Length: 409
Ligand code: ADP
Ligand code: MG
Image 1: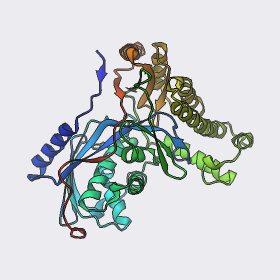
Image 2: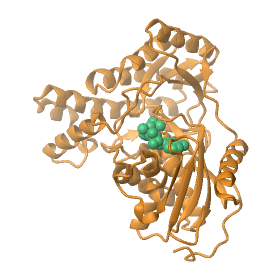
Image 3: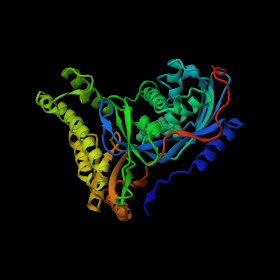
Image 4: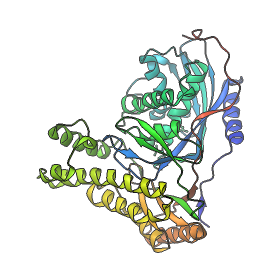
């Protein structure tokens, strides 16, 4: 029997977070807000290079039951960390927090404050069905769930428009960069806040625009299988930062802000004499081109033909960008051997998850084959989910907060 990572209904998630809130704080929350994890179809390690990417929001969400406080205190509890509680003041939320998870949970509050938004203290209880550290962005899910709750109870109004959501996504990305200290790009937060039910978004990180792209998987008889390898996934341990630094150094040398803005990629590659730099930058250029190919195929109703492009993305991430690992390679190869049309690692890499494009009727066979291959390689048990494009972060329980603006500031 393979393990399936099930998502919760909104009612279940809201009930879990509310129950945790009541047991911890002995009162009712103002409401419950939920934000999704994501899986990226194509466009990996390009979001900090001004490139495009194509994520979908997952039905797997982080739920936050939250109540505004009339002072500047913050009390947090979660079912997914140890120690599971934290108490402090808004001003205590700063880089270097002893409990890493607190920076993810409350970093957005600090960034909102720094930006001049009237944020008050709050009590929050968190529960999630997004697997942590699986490359499915539990980090953005917790950041965005708390951020959208704070937007609501402090009546900032940002969640009401895509422009406001883009700003909230930027706040959450800065929380991850500046408070947590993980130098990730902005894809995850945009996926959590700016997607639409049933659609992927084509996020252009150069101008921060989004375009909704229905993938048409059901009509093509296809499924997007996510394989959580359960291998270690460490974005803060220097590898990710090193990749980002290389890209930024080369861009600076080429006289552009981001690699996306290089006018003639072939000519630029010809100037690179260092083999590592050449391969890193080649990944970025070729991956940006692959996003264009995939979007063109999908929008022409030819999603069944994107398999080879996914395969090429994996090879590039493995050989040029060197962010894959044995578990991801085994997941990808076993999926293809069992009938997947294409497969690639997804997310930051060094563990985490892979995706496979599979004919729907082969989903079970591919899952069994991957689990068996992991067994053969002594790799432990992977877990699976079939990705369905879900909606963005939103309030899932409680009515609009009627408190007058400014009272909490
Ligand atoms: P990913 O985003 O791929 O899941 P990251 O390493 O970026 O992996 O983020 C995982 C970290 O986010 C966890 O180690 C934890 O600190 C924090 N986190 C995510 N979800 C929760 C949660 N529900 N409760 C507490 N912390 C969480
Ligand atoms: Mg993350």
